[in-house]
Image (cartoon, rainbow, N blue to C red; front, side, top):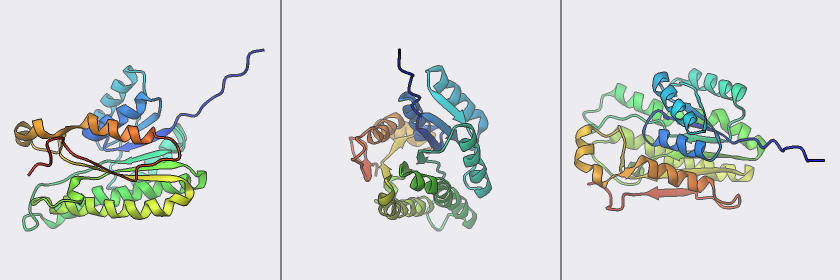
Length: 244
């Protein structure tokens, strides 16, 4: 008598800021290895297009539009994911916004908007999933940060503040979650060719930037390591070095 097929649960991955750039590529990479990938961003239209593209390649992807600067939207999104896909095994904190202005020129409301998304939003996303991970004694949190958290760049005061905050949070959370077998990885990319850069900067410096796909492949490689191994922190830089 043939043995019954074993139903292996696919890991559920939630990627914020998944409609473009690094987030989009990370979603595609996790889908390529059989994960159930849940994509969030503010634009439902852009998300739907990315999801269709992943599905055409045979991946399993789902669209969950969410503005992570809105705490109620985060709670609602997590409930929807759990109901329709399952408990979240991997959170990728990737969503980010910025303005390239010096401190004097950055308006208070700009600071608030950037902090609400890049820092507070990711704190709340993490809070929304971490208790389940601890209870199940498994899970991953990938914080996609920035080289700005460890190196000084003028004209990025608000952005740097949020990324340095996420770097510090990730370090504390990592130590607190080890006892629960939950892995927290701070990913610190240097200049990456994404739409966060202006078209002029991409034309001028694109040849010296990393590709978003390359960063995503590096993230997936950490996820695929043996269970008893984890990379706590990963600094990625263009082969030709940082931009000035």
